Length: 322
Image 1 (tube, rainbow, N blue to C red):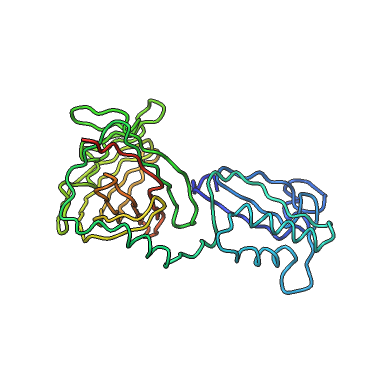
Image 2: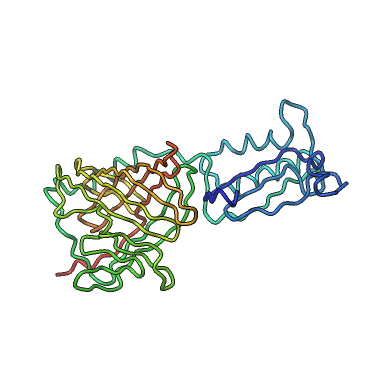
């Protein structure tokens, strides 16, 4: 699992009757041996290390019976799901079986998201309308302007991280959000961490084009280079229509932009290469001066969708005084 380099791995073992690896580990004890979870992994056991589990009276074992029930609760974080299972199994087994987990998860994960509340959305949306957007000019940003986002892995449904993009300095040609550096039109040029450049775009990542208005289309070629690979992309973007969108920061009138890219990638470690495609969808607000939501999906050269991500606005701060 470490070699796969996935953001999230979940392993559930309801097989703690005896240790199937006993010969390999030369262990004669009952129950599964303890295992440590690699980074980004949760390993759940039906019972504690060295113990055995009950088969239960029904179709499933005692552990799986309660796990299936707990998984059905909308909005429950993964940690809460397994806490509920542990409490129920311990109670029904009279304390003889206590489920156990080894985890190194770094983000939140929810099996079943909470359902939306359409009525509340409609009420907020009607109060926030700003009318027709004829055009969005180049945003006039100032040092101190900031946008807080949450980054969601849509394949797992988990919030991977929350981050703030704050404008720290402006030069004649660049906007610098700490180590995240763009041109004046918010097109990424390079990204640094702890003073080290970890990613560059040449000439720039061409996601935005101003002024932005419905029907506008543009194409560009860009090359991204990072520690792992070099990839050449052929982009096509178009502003489709005006849309009102709800995100955690509120309801915003935006222009919806969609794009595609075809890419050719070469890995630096082993020289492996391949082709794939990506799709982009974002909603840009003239009020925030930045996107309020951005969705990205990538299909690799095996035809597998291995990335599906959404970044959405949590809050923002802009100095719009003239």
